[in-house]
Image (cartoon, rainbow over all chains, first blue to last red; front, top):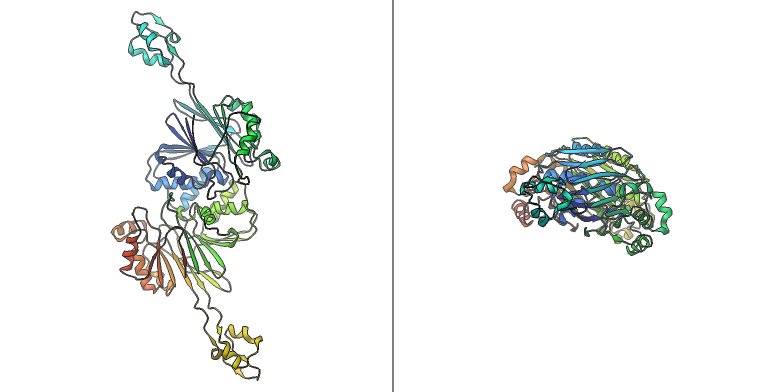
Length: 301
Length: 301
């Protein structure tokens, strides 16, 4: 699982601060999460192949999270993309994108599929054999979802010494990996867990931005490996956090602790602060394992 | 008159190529012309004070000319702008901007005034004591206007030696500058042109993008000091220019010659070409005084 931070600042793009966008690589998927103005240029800078992006998740319709979307869709068209593109985001996202295509008289030559979200409960919005994506309903000034990306339980790992000792034919190895008991060459039933071990622990990533402190998300993200939680402010500006429905670094850490997250990533910083270390320091008073997002930074988990 | 090229490439923004946007400083006005994605960041890089921009002119609703507009409007709001902002552009521009403000539940705290254009004839769309702006109807795939910015005839310049010799009281100097005849201290009528000279020649700038070759614009831009005319292609790709309703460098030069322009600026280059010199070479076979726009370049006229 690899996460690339294209932008992690709040409000407005600046010469040295990009607004929110991330690329999550998980099980051969390349998911784009949020798409602030300029995201397409950041994708180019990171040499991310546009055709590998098949699913874009938009948390909410504030500009710093989606003003780059229509440009990206338009550029895909100009590059004669043929691959389907799925967009998941709040209701209204289809209207605003299609209106701009209509005004430009520029319809995509690839399938553009909108999945408009309206529910206030966590729901499964994407699933294939290896990955599931759930919404995480957040509490912000407009309708907002975070997203939980979860690998499914993987194949079991064969202990080849035991498998051979048990005289199991190679034709059954796949069944074994899938967790089934099988008959051996002598017609004896071999219990799966006698010759296999659990596979790699499936990984999970939760993206939570933008939101004020919301404890109700804890059960949804319980035991998540990596939690990105916005921390627009420090505690000294908690009054601004409450007024604008954002979180402080401390609040992000409390959520991480209650959810028993593996790692907490902070981001969506207000540009009012001189440096990022105070965010980490404040969060670590509550939760040990904290990392700071920075524009262009890549995390491998 | 000062022109700053924020972006001059066609189609899509890239790491080293911005899409169309220009800032024209003329008689204390700072006019923003077109607004591709990322324009607000370029404005910051050039340290252009946001509050000095009171009028934005959008030629047409293709993304590379206006996808940065809504972000700029949004950033002005976040920076608590109070100055009125006037937007001139094709009908539909108001709907697409206001839809995005509605979805974000983020209305501006300053007056945002849309001047939607529909005419296929050149019309006066802005005027004050010093400057006039006219549309230049172009021929592109969607409804498109160029813009002609013209200084008005300035004050006449007093020849102080002659003025004093003619015994004209200082109270009449302003009248003289405005071109009036005045009475001198002896009650004699002094003809204006006996003691004044013409002021500085008023300057003019024509912005013509995007368009296929359109000779009908020549009378509108006749004798313009500086003509920006798109040159997306070279002549070897004239078939692409015709198909996409763009121009070649040669066609831009023919327009400049027929219009008796002072200088021709080329821009809106396709990124298919390795360098820009061939655009200049091709245009100069027709018209001598050619300059190449480049991102970040400033021209003083």
